[in-house]
Length: 111
Length: 115
Image 1 (cartoon, chains in turn brown, yellow):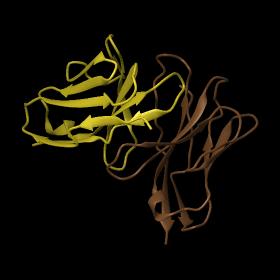
Image 2: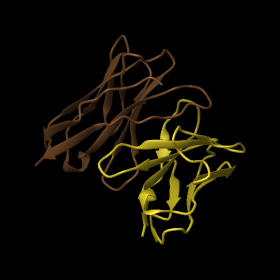
Image 3: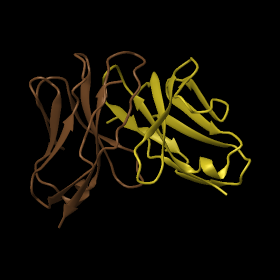
């Protein structure tokens, strides 16, 4: 399984942008890059995903490096509700691909 | 958006009893569901991958007879923890996907406490 590496933790001030990095140097050509986040005592929730091009949605932006070996999740204005563990995972395109989570990045937002 | 409903959210049981956790995809058909367990301040650990109409594929180290997974329909998968013991106490989370390579939807999790 292709693996990802993320910093264990990051801090951000409220209302400032946050850039969460993810390295995935062994990514294959058909792997999608997905980001999920998990608030305490809850199941993870989808944030964003992409294949090659940068992506934007109402929650965040995803910047994908040209060689696809790394990506960055961008929260444009961090709020206290964004404090969570953020997981970067790779999703294959086969029927039976399994989904493995790494340790993720624990984001703290300082008021 | 798509919703995955997981029940119960919390269960306390006596050692030796069995507990069933349900995971339903409410507005889409989930051909594949995943079951995870999570210990405090740790990441999600994949237990098994469940495909509708076939036997689940268990990860190494996960006891098949201990954690029974049934995925009898496109909208329902169940995890039964048989003869539960205190070491089975954990947060269990199910996940379903709508299509290949597409986003995953997660249940809200079940906190199992075995006394």
